[in-house]
Image 1 (cartoon, one colour):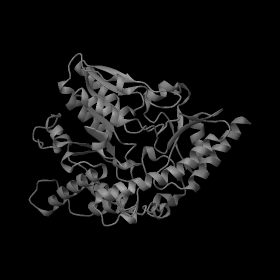
Image 2 (cartoon, one colour; image 1 turned 90 degrees about the vertical axis):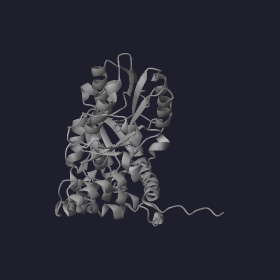
Image 3 (cartoon, rainbow, N blue to C red; image 1 turned 90 degrees about the horizontal axis):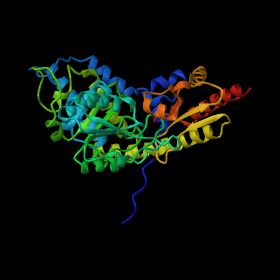
Image 4 (cartoon, helix red, strand yellow; image 1 turned 45 degrees about the vertical axis):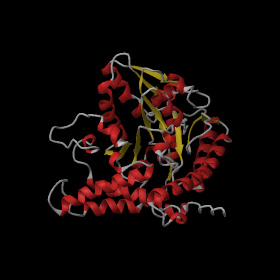
Length: 411
């Protein structure tokens, strides 16, 4: 049997042409905090806003339009990560949804139970669990981070017969580190614990299959992958049926709706669907396949494309005098944090901003990690993340601006 031809690479120039914000001249490396929006996504939101829409369950077309938009968004998210639409909970942010899930899961926790958390995670996958454990009388077991590599230190060893929950990131939003999630979820499953995977920073950069990861609950944010400001948690509907979140008495008790507080932003639902459709269409060679297959092919091609751009960025930073790259994970998303000797992270980010380069500085809510690294008192780090629309010219602009800071700091 002949080998299949490799799929064509992602046409970054064509994608950039669909992102109006790029016309303003900025080189965006702040994608880990939120990506810029392509025209099809904005148009889908605008079309919904310009249409007759009413709340769900009404006996008329405007109400059906709202219901159909929500249903389409559930299907799109399911195709994005390999879930089923009946298990897709939608909400305003990953933080909000994690608090909802923490409240529901912790109802059965008791004194002596344990929750396993990592110091690599964004605080949204830390604080809701710490607070829920404290209310239930459960204790927290921490997985540490090697400050040199940015890797988790023996995470499976933290899981015991008392473990009720294991929360872990799919990829660090600060260093890009990609832990062995499948090993952790398997260890959790072996002791009957629930696994909660923060996929916010992983989902935009690689093909994701929640079954392969072994995640009981998998969280993601649409606005980190070219979509509107909304989020989702994906789970087996059977698991969700066993959870009882706080909710209003008249609100539906159906799954997944009972986890979704209040009236959803109907206008954003078509934007979420459009974002997934756009990602699914990044590789023309996958045309004709179902959307899930096209998403997997496109995200694999996008991962390779971003890795090439990131290699240029990382090599340039490592080769610049006075620049220290933080961490050296063996497997990572295209995200890097660094420091410039003689300049605070805020001074560096301000200088880059004056040169039309958008980066982030501080701890980016990776609070535990920055404490481990001992960098909180001096302002944290500077972060640069490659997005689907990042090209080599963007990288060269960032490197030139960093070199200017480094030269000034040494002068």
